[in-house]
Length: 278
Image (cartoon, rainbow, N blue to C red; front, side):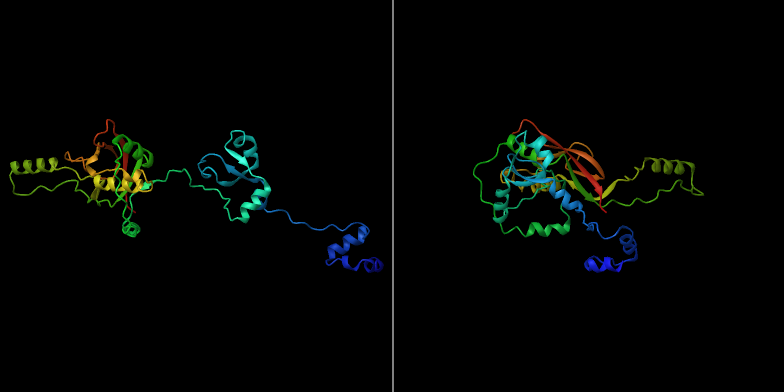
């Protein structure tokens, strides 16, 4: 046994288990070497291939961008539909050497929820006050303005307001001693006619001015849409208003508003959702 170990000292076992195994089978065979398996991330990278987008592709990028895609999807679906084109390996190396980003844009073409800016976010708008947009001589038509509003404003606009805590109503009212029956009857009728408090009431209100400002913020990200002229007089509440005041709502819930621009034959409807501020 000593002669066996002396023949190949570099392969001398280091643990009792290995010594027993070598003693049983000898050292004449090829010693197996442990290999590490590839990680999941490495296996995922092997399934990707760099392609060039031929059209705007939501959740991937604009036309002309270089993005990684799954090989099987490219082969079976996107390449036969002429959505993407293969990029040779040598060209990929040149792109990387030139610093061209080969990444996927997950936010491209995805509509983001439109919510009202909180008070602490107003500083972001104040930083851009130094920029003055040049005067546009060409005015957009009312129909084109409605098309842009329909494109960039989602179906639901969210607002957050503080609800008013409701006081507990007394279930019964004690009868006054010594009062006449007529006075008691009149008091009971007055209590019955008193309107109940609205459990969804809020502090302040959501007005058409708030909605117009929120819509303008959504249109400001596009050069053409930023030219749309919209005022609070172009917006009216269809439901949820009180006392024939169609310019504001004072309760939680979802309500419909109509956007009617001067000179347009059609109008738009959007849902205004007022939720309790956390």
